[in-house]
Length: 431
Image (cartoon, rainbow, N blue to C red; front, top):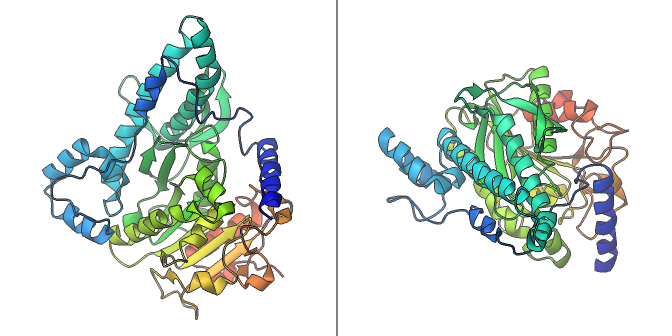
C-alpha cells in the first residue's frame, strides 16, 4: 500500500508541476557547498531566547497578560531586541508581531539580495559555475517569495516613501527575475504574523485585524508552499476570500482572513506515509488558534479553519491525539484523505469560539471537491475522503469544472464566504 502511495505522490507532483502549482524550476533544498555557503548562516530560525520576565511556557493567555503589563516603552524595546520571539509567539498582539516580522522580512531580503548579486556577478571559475547552477535558482525563488510578501503588505521605497499594498500578478518582471509584477491595490489592512526563512520558508499573513474581527478564517494550504515563487497563489486565494466576504455582506473592518503557512510540508508528507511526524504541525496550529482568542477584544468572534489539499490532514491532526482546535467551523477542500473515519471525530474536538450561532450544532465540519480535482483518484493511504457522504460532513457545492486549485472561484468561493460569515442558510449544499 505504501508503495502504491509513493507512485501516487510521484504522479501528484507531476500534475502539480503541469498545473503550475509547483514551478517549472524546482527549488534546490540542499545546494552544493561553495564559497558562498555562509548564505546558510542567514537562515533565521525561531529564536528560543525570551525577553526578561516573559512566561516560561507557551500559553497564549499568560503571554498576552505579560505583554499587556509592560509599559509602551518596554514593549517597543523588546520588539526591537527580541524580534524573532515577538514575531513568532502566539499571545503577542498583532501590531507588535507585524512590526517585528516586517523588520525580519526586510533585513532577510537585503541579505539574500546581496548574496544573490554577489554570486550572479562572481568570476566564472569552476566552483562558481557549479554554485550558480545550484544556488542561484534557490536564491532566486526565495527572493521572489519575499518580494511577493513585500508587495502584498506594502513597504517603503528607496526614497523612504510607503508604497501601498498591492496584489501580486504571478508574472515575472522582465527586468528582474526575482520579482513578480505588482497588480492593483487590494482592500484590507495586511499584518505579517509570522516569517521564517528556515527550510522551505514559513509565513503567516492576516488581511484584517484579528483583535477586532467578528469573523476570522484561518486557511492552511497544502503541498508546494513556502517562501518561494508560488507563494503568490496563496496570496491570491486569500484576496479572493476577502473580496467575496465583502461582496456577501462582510465589513472590511470586522473580518480577518489569515494564511497559515507555518509547517514543514515535506516532513509532514513523508511522515504521512510512515505515520510519524505529520502530527508535528498540530501543536503549532492549535496554539495559533488559541492565540487568536487570547488577543481578541470584545464579543468572541466566529472562527473558521480551512484546510486545502494536504492542509486538510494538518487540520484534522489538530483535532485528534489529544489536540483541540479552536474553531466554530472546519472546511476541508481538495483533500487526499484524512486520518479519521467520521466528521464527528473532528467536531467533538473543536472548541467553539462563539457557540451562539443560532443552530443546534456547536461545531460543524464542511467538505467539498471540485469536479476535476485529480485527488479523487488517490489511494486511501492518508485516510478517508471527507467529501464522501459516508464521512457525514456537510457537503457544499463547488465549481463542477474546477481543478485542484479551483476552490477560490464560483459557487465554491461564495459558499465558503457564507460559512465564514455564519450565514449557513445561504450555503448551497451538494445534492
